[in-house]
Image 1 (cartoon, protein in one colour):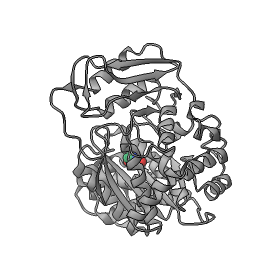
Image 2 (image 1 turned 90 degrees about the vertical axis):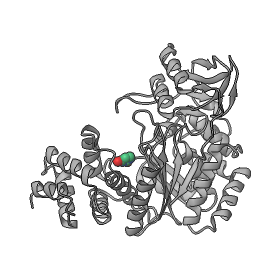
Image 3 (image 1 turned 120 degrees about the vertical axis):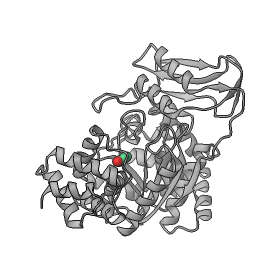
Image 4 (image 1 turned 30 degrees about the vertical axis):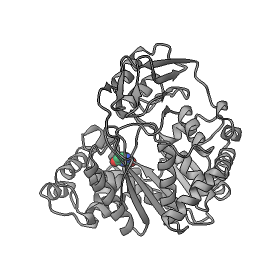
Length: 432
Ligand code: URA
C-alpha cells in the first residue's frame, strides 16, 4: 500500500477501506508516512469529507493507536462528558459531583486550555494542592470513593490524535466534521466510559459557528459512538456569550462552587444540572425528569458539594475550598469597566472576552505559557439587561498584570450597548 494512492483516492471522493485507514494511522504514529503526505490527506478530507463508515474506521484506528484506560475496577456505570470548548465553561466542575451524588461514576480526563478557551485542568489546578497527575490506582480509587475524579490527559492515550491535531493546526485543516469527530471520539472511546455526553457548542466563541454545523458534528459523533457500542447523546448549546458570569481559573471554580452551594437557578446552574440529568438517564438512573429532580435534590441537600470536597481531598486539594471558596488564590489588582451610555446590553462576544482573560494571564498564547490562577473577569450584566452610564459591566482581575488598559478596551468592545432590547436565544438548542 502507498500513501500516495490513498491521498489520490480520497481526493477523488472514493471511500477508503478499513485496512487503508489503519495503514494511514499506523504510518502516522510510526513516522513511516511523512508529515507532507499526512497533511495532503487531511486536506483531501476537508474537501471531500469521509463516509460514516470511514469516520468510524478512522476513530477506531486512532483509539487503538495507544493505551486504553481500564475502568473495570470502578464499582458501577461510568459516564463521561466532553465539551467542544467554550468561554466560561465550567460545567464539568458542577456536573461531575452532581452525577456522583446521584449514583453515577464520572472518571474524567480533561485538557488544558489554549487560546481563548480555558481548560478544566487549569481551573482545577488553581485549587491549592490539587493534583491532576495522580497515578492510575489513585484515580480509580478516587472515582470509587468520591464518585468522580478529573485528571489531565495522558500522552499515551491516542498518540495519533496528538500528531494529526498538531498537523491540522498548522495546515488549516481543523474544521472538518469527520476529522473533529474522529479526534474527539477516539479519545472518548480510549477513555472507556459506558456513557458519553457531548456538549457541542455553537456561536461566535465556538468551533462550530452555526447551529446547523454543530448539529452535523453532534450527529456524526453520536452515530460513531453508538456504532462503537457506547450509549451516547449530544446537546447543542449556545456559545455566542460566555457561560455564567466568571471567566478565568480560580474565579470559575468559585462560580461552580456557588452553584453546588445552592445557586442552581442561574443559566449556568440550569444547564449543568440538565447535562447531569442526561448523563444519569444514560446510566439507567430513571427518566430525564426523574434524573433532573435527583440532580436538583443533590444540590439542595448539599450531597453534591460533599462529593466535590471528597474529590478535592482524594486528589490532594484543600477540601475546605468547597465551603470557603475565599481560600482560592485571590487577585492583587482589579479594574471595573463601566457603561458609558444608557441602553441595553446587546451582546457579550465570547471570543473577545476569552481573549481579554487570556491577556490578563488566565489563558495561554503558547502551550508553555504559565497561567496566573487569579486572572480573569466577572461579568456584572447579562445580554438584554438595561444599563445606565457608570454602571459596572465587568471587573477585570490579575496579579501578574497591573496595566489593564488593553484588556479593558477589548472588554468594552465586546459588550456593546444599543437602544433596542435584543432577543435572548435559549442556551440549550437541541438534543441529539
Ligand atoms: N477538540 C478536539 O479534541 N479535537 C478536534 O479536532 C477539535 C476539538
